[in-house]
Length: 451
Image (cartoon, rainbow, N blue to C red):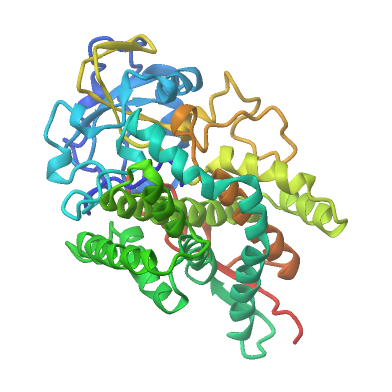
């Protein structure tokens, strides 16, 4: 599970028009005077390539107060040292009760529909000691031993999805596919369903619900909240069923822990399963999609990785996943934090109750920390990126996500070695949403494997 989730509401992007940026004048407390107008943020053009705007903010307004498209005002933290500090600062709470405004109750922050579905008590919304208790329970599902034992299942799912892509070509000399819809999206959905213990016959329902949530910027109004409520009702029923027939899955493990005095309520169990599924799949969708896209646009790096894989060497793959997480990672901004007292961050005075959003994508391209940060270098070794966060909210499911990413990329590049983009980069569209960064579609072409 990752410390990541989408900005609520269909208006999460774009932010356009002459009044879209009331922040163009630097607020009191900003440590660096803004040079010229603030670049446009959160437009569709920005979504395609936010990195120039983030570079401007790092240089001129590293801790920057802005009005988000939802109307919520928040601070954006863009430099690496400030970001690392903020992610671990106990004065920045995850609990929306500390927000000075009532935005969360109006659905303007957090996961759409989580409040109305009674799914608030999960790791992304709580602080110690409750966070410590719940994280200890769930961490048992992500031990190195358990993740390693799951590797054959990830490989099986990966091969099955590639088989289906190839079989749909019906003997064509060149095949085509949408790598997001046909591969990157279903792989982590089915994997997390297996981990939770969702029966195979119910997993397509989860895929539909998750699809609605991941498309929240373009789906029908209210569709996200309805999907969340359906998922909540299903999880409650599944927890009830598993109490009578415990297995070796995560939900059964949470039930056992609750029954042995760990004080896990049914609401907490449902909320935990919900956020593991939601945060645990979208980050991996984007890791695979963004990672393949970056490799296809950097052919020398892609060739280097393919040669390494052909030689049976997986060191570059392991190292390369970390570089892909840094270069264009799946989580653009860390999830919401709220100041519990007045504090200074990067020279800016942040008032009690103010929301703070750490821009991981900006911090991970800070030239003060990374040499040639805008260059994709799979051999990069000095790479303490923040792609999965830092501190007590570091991504719990990072080992599983890395396994899925490594398996997906290695298998695609080995089985479909001439994979290439089937669209111009400026024709691709990125999904709306404040927190995540991922492509809506990724059209590719390839030579189908011989039968």
